[in-house]
Amino acid sequence: MLTVAVLFRNMGRMTPDCVQILADSMRTLYLDRTQAEVIFVDDASDPGQEVTPMLMQLRQAFPVLVRILRFKTRQHYTRGLAHVLSAAKGHVLFVSHDMLVPRAYIRGVLEVAAMDDAFGIVRGVSTYVDVFPQHMVEPPGGVGNVNQLNSFADFVAQRWGLACVEDEFLTGDSMLIKRSVIEKIGVFDSKFFGYYGDIDYGLRAQRAGFKLVCAKGAWLFHQGAGFYQNESQRTGKPYEQIHAARMKVVEAAYQVFREKWSSASPIPADYRGTAEMQFAKLRAAAGGPGGYEAPLGAVAADVGEWL
Image 1: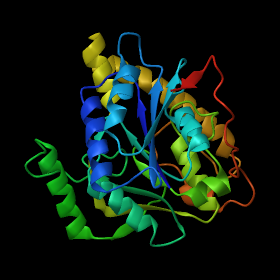
Image 2 (image 1 turned 90 degrees about the vertical axis):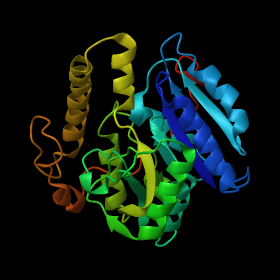
Image 3 (image 1 turned 90 degrees about the horizontal axis):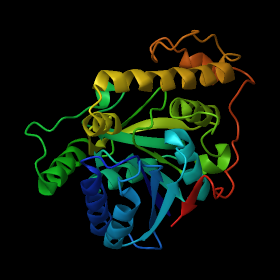
Image 4 (image 1 turned 120 degrees about the vertical axis):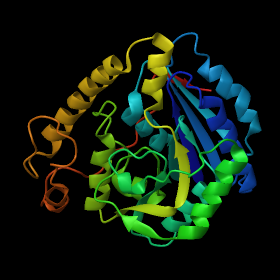
C-alpha cells in the first residue's frame, strides 16, 4: 500500500497543477484503491485562500481514496508529517505543493526502494534540492507542459535506470518512507516545528539500520521555497523580510535539535547550516537519542479535522 501525502499552506500558483498532474500520474500507473491512497493536508491556510474547497473538488480526479486533513492551527512541516505517518496505511511518499510529480518519479522511487530491505528512505532528483546540489537536474529546454514534464522524466529514468547513491543525512523536500521504517522508529518527533524534524528522522532511521538513498533515475519538477515566494507575491512583503522570519523558525528548530542530540556529539551553539554537523558521530554514538516516536492519536477538534 502506498500513501501519497501533499502538504499545502495557502494557494501557490502551482497548486492546481500539482494536484492535477499527481492524479494523472497515478491513473497512468494504474494505481487503484487496493494499492494506494492520497492524503492532502491543508496546514491552516489563511482565510480566503480556499485551499480545502479546491482539494475537495479536485479529489474526484483521482483513481484512489483521497483523505483531506484540514488543520485549524498551523502545524508546519514536521508536525503535519507526524500526523500523516500516524494515519497512513503503507509506505508514505511525501511531496509538497510546489512540485510536479511525473509518473516516472513515483515508479522510480518505488523500484529503488524494493531493491534492498535496508533502503529505508528514498528520494529522487529534481530541479531544486536544498543542501544537495548534486541531486539537482535541470531540463535543458525547461518544462512548458505536461508532455514535456513526462518526457524529460522518462529520459532521466532511461538514462539512470535504478542507479542510486547513499546520502549522509535526510532533507525531506520529497521522500518515500518505507513501512518498515515507520514500524521500527515511528513518526516524526512533533517537538520540532517546521525544520530539523527531517534530519532527526533520518538519523533515527540510520541508527536503526536503514539507509537514506537517492534514486538518480527518479526526477520531478520542484520550484523550491514555493510557499515563501508565494507569500511575498500575495502580501507584497519583500522576500528578504519573509526569509528573515523563516530563519528565526529555523534557528528555534535547530536549538531543539541541539538539545536532543548534543549528548551524542558536540554541536555548534548557533545554526550554521549542515556543513559543520558531525553526522557520522551522531549516527555512531552509543546510547543517546533516537528511538521510537509513537504515532499521534486522533486529531483534536480544536487542532484540525478529517474531511
